[in-house]
Length: 379
Image (cartoon, rainbow, N blue to C red; front, side, top):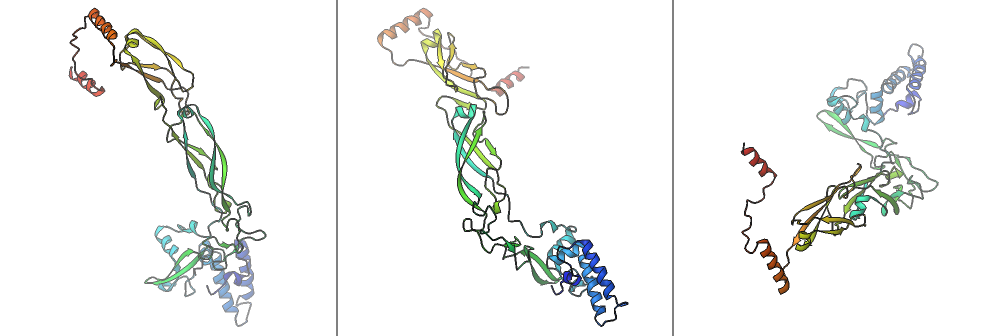
């Protein structure tokens, strides 16, 4: 960049549009050839005009601030193939003006941290009724020495001397189109626009350190394996002391020694001797609450019979009510009998006329679709 247009108009780089206009008018009246007959007045007046042409146009000013020459290498607006332009200008020509402007400039040192995910194993009762756990986690936290700035005590980040705070540098290549300038992150400041001459010795300039801390997580009632509990702002602190991400606790429910879970319902089986199933009985059935509940087995209960205990299953997650507890009865046939027991069973068989039973021979049990097919096929 051969000419400093800001110096030509005598304004700072952060001057407003009104300040630029006032400076131009003042200098234009001072160096206008009609009122100034000095030898360099004409050239000075032309230079002032070019400076105002660039700095008063937001797009040209942006190109100039990024290291480009919006007036071209020939000094005019119509430089043809001899004109130098940025790669972003080419993209703007294809995809619309200003398409890449939002991505230009230095990137902030302070950025949001990443989300964190940790697993948590709980038992079935804790999953059903909810619980609170205290977890020890290792995450990034704000550096206590520099409080996130990354700079040592008594120092602060300074403007990069290579890119002058823009966070980008210009790379020029020649092609059949002429000189093509592409913008790349500044290698000196890594695109931040500032450097830290004296980084914090605790965090090495990152603004954060690793630390173990305690987090309390409340597990709601009704969770299941794969459920994730979100703790907002409890994840990794971002670079530069940026806001923390979220912490996700993924639940894994351990297998229960008695109950099997299917959705909100619980399933278990009870094995009874043949005599109890025939005569009927009452058993104390364990529950997740820890207090047994009575289950009445009616006389003549067959193996495979299911009893449903309403609302004794798992509470519904984020909804009212509970699932059911389904108990399947399995009748156990005795395999070891002494002579007295064999004699009693034979007398029972004689009394019931079951010495040589023929058995009930029928088709195998059909599923739901088979029964529907038979129902529709009979009409």
